[in-house]
Image 1 (tube, rainbow, N blue to C red):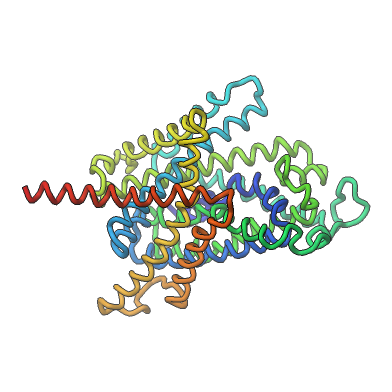
Image 2: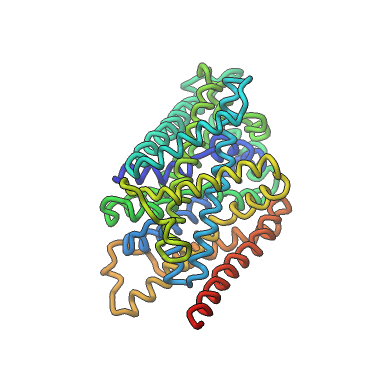
Length: 450
């Protein structure tokens, strides 16, 4: 993969339906300033984690890197658990994304069944990943480009409308930024901001895909740092920039309750075919996330096999370097998640979604702790920090800040009744992963003794 692929893959994993569809609801809950504050803090947390990941992935460019680092610098049980959690995150996401893509196609073809479109997109995404790493990267580059162009266009047109250059339907003067403050800084109280912050980190999940691609990246020492250093800037521009425009042009009480705030803004400035245009953008966002998700989950299985944690057959690659068995298994996992969302939505699927929602934040904690222990090991072996091609600034302040802020995102869910169940499902699942790993190791040692 080249630098442009890496940049777009890291963007593709982050920018999805959370920004295009759910952001208006977030503004409605926390108010304009509260939402901006929450996303600002979330962007800083992600950037701190990415700095930690940068040091690790440049020093040791591994495909499916997180669990390899956790295995080596925290413990093999943690490495196994991190890989399973991350694989589950993207596999569950695959199921929901294929469903969402089918539902969007129904808006254009109302008499067609959803499952036909879902099956069609499954084939497209599977083929994109199966052909070659280069083909996957190129596909993801163009998927992500459409999203980025849509957001940049939204911010530019919205900005012109805020200052009165473009006329807003139903208004006689430039709205400026009155909607941001007219009902107070925190119209629903500060607790609403706190509740929003718990979900913001999940909206930013996907940036860590840079680490998964490290082993298949051309010149990782140069391209990975470049992608990481621009992460915070891109998150601020795309997420916070979009939210400022939405909040300024749409009263927070009406923001995206019934439809995408992007559609509301485009309609208010008279952009033709706003609904169809945004449905197309959201469809590409969904397919982009599915494309990246299948890649990430496949590489996790491949990496687990290479580390000897699952049978080596899963790591077998074809002539184009694609691990087809791992790819097929990950796609089957996505299909099972899709089936459970229909057949057992209130039981099995609810548990899967709850676990996968918190999983990324636990992965971030593992990245931060791995970096802390890696640096200790590096210095203990006689090396100096100056020898590192990419080093986390202000060590150990930044990795510990990343770890603690990610930990708080998990623990503080207890205070939100709507998300509390995620923690209650996650704890026994993590314990089960550790139990499976150490149980397997115990049985292996007994066989060797006999």
